[in-house]
Structures are given as structure tokens and as C-alpha cells.
Amino acid sequence: MSITMDKPVKPLTGKRFFFYVASFLGFVVVVNIVFITLALKSNSGVVAQDYYQRGINYNQTLDQAEYQKKLGWTSQVDVNGDMMVYTVLDQQSQPVRGRKVAVKMARPVMDGHDFSILLAEQPDGTYQGKFQTPLKGAWDAHISVQWDDGVFYDYTKLVLE
Image (cartoon, rainbow, N blue to C red; front, top):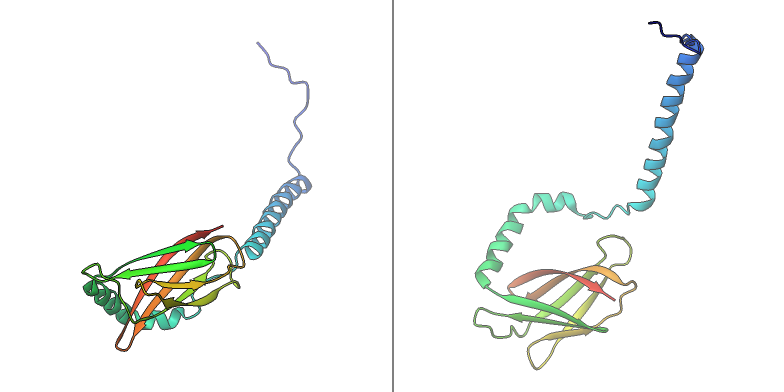
């Protein structure tokens, strides 16, 4: 039994081999250019601006976390329209009064739209403040409750519509 081939096999010449290698490398370069362009256009580069200082102060961050555990405070953030209501309760579930409360709102996906608001203490022990977000969607609320000899940090993720 014999096998006959209709088309003769073309030998791999230097020009043809060069064409295959150049085509493959050109394809890789084009794909890399597309990926680099997409990465540069889509990544806002949102990172902590003071990352080096945070690294140096890491032990103080751990001490602050331990201090907050000992306080035993619980908190809750509610957003009703353009009003933010922050409730912080002590270990006996009583409102924590007489503090200064500041909130820094930050977009986790886009830099340049962050803003801060101060919350005023209300007679019921909550802290409230009006705000207007420039964009809808996901926001991180970094809250600091300050008094003469200490500070309590809180963090929550919000989805605003």
C-alpha cells in the first residue's frame, strides 16, 4: 500500500522562518502595547500617599488597635439621602458624647473625588452631617472620633446612590 501526496511539502527556507519569527514577535509586541495602554488608562494608581511613614509607624498602629479593643466601642453609619448619621456606643451601650467626629470619604476605585465632612453632635448622642457625593457608587468612610486625650478610628464601606 502506497500513500501518495497531492501537494509537495514546501521546504522551510530562511526567509519563511524569518517571517514566522518576526510575525510571532510582532504579535507579542502588539499585545503588550495593548495591555500597557489599558493598564495606564484604567489604573488610577490609588495608593496611600504616606505609605513609607505608615510602615515606620506600624507599631503605633498596632498599639492604637489594641487601645480601641480595650475601649469596647461599637459604631454604626447610616446614610439617609444627603445626611450621614454616625452612632458610637461605649461598653455599656450608652452614646459616646462630647467628641469631635470627622469623616473622610474616599473612592476606592478612582482618585480625585475625596472629600471630608464634620459631623455635629445631636441631643440623642448621635453625630450628623450633610454631604453631597460628586459620584454615585462605592465609597470608603474613614471616621475619626477625637477628644482631648485620645482618638478612635473607624472605617466602613458604603454604596451611595
